[in-house]
Each structure stands twice: as structure tokens, then as C-alpha cells.
Length: 182
Image (cartoon, rainbow, N blue to C red; front, top):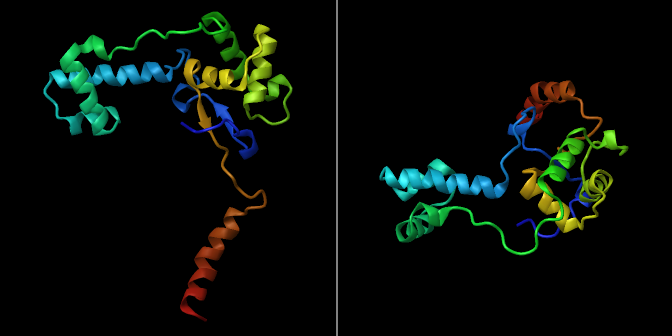
């Protein structure tokens, strides 16, 4: 979706979703959120809602709702349920993922990093310290986005020397003078 994971060069960090901060309930993963949207869409199908209304209600495009409706009509609500993943099982079990979550929530500085920003390499180091398991960058990405429900965050770029009061004064006094041409 975002291409390669070279976000560190851009000053990118990884943070839990803002809706989860301070919550004792673990956030839903992306696949769980997607399934919850489809389940809600089924409820709205049964109530007779239009595709456009349902799309607006669950926050997706109308084409997705058309596709879901077709699948629902052919196979019922169970056809829209999430299927268990096939292939190799994850390296970390649920207990280890919870240990990693707890460690990451302490912040990067608590783990000896200078800035309180998470990068894939930093998270990988913490995972290795906590679980003894070494993960590739791609696996760290899947852990953060899929299993922990974290999202990509970019720090706001602002000049350190920015003076808000001086900016407000300039806009109030200087800009009108310049605009009038005096």
C-alpha cells in the first residue's frame, strides 16, 4: 500500500492509533476492522439500505459495497467473514505480541533511543530483546500494522525558531500594509 518501508529516512515513526491511547482494551487489527465493516454492511443490507448509503455509513467506496452485496447474495453473511490465514504461522505467538506491545508503549526513549520515535529497526531491536526472536523489516511492519493495529505517523515539520506571536503580529499589521501597496 505504501510501497517500500524506507520511512526512517523521512523521519517517520510508528504510534498506536489515537483512539486507543490510554485504553486497556487492545486495538482491533486492520483485518478485524475490515471484517467489522463488512458485518455492519450486512446488517444494513438486511435493512434495505442502498449501496451509496451503506458505503457512506461504513466509510468505504460504493464499489466495495457492490462487491460485498454480490458475495452476500451468493453466499450469505458467512461469505463475508474473515478466513483464517493460510501459510506459515507467525513467529510470535499472542503472548509474545502482548509483551512487545507493552514494551513499545513505554516509548523509544525508555529503551535507550535518543528520540522518542519508532522506526522499523528500533522496533525490531526491541522485539529481539523482549522475545529473543529476530524479525525482518517486513515482518516488523506486519507486526506493527496487522497484529498491533498501529498506523504510520509522520511528525509535523515545524521550524524550531518559529515565533507564533510574531507571525500573528505580522499578519495583523504588516500584511494589510503590503496588500494596500504602501
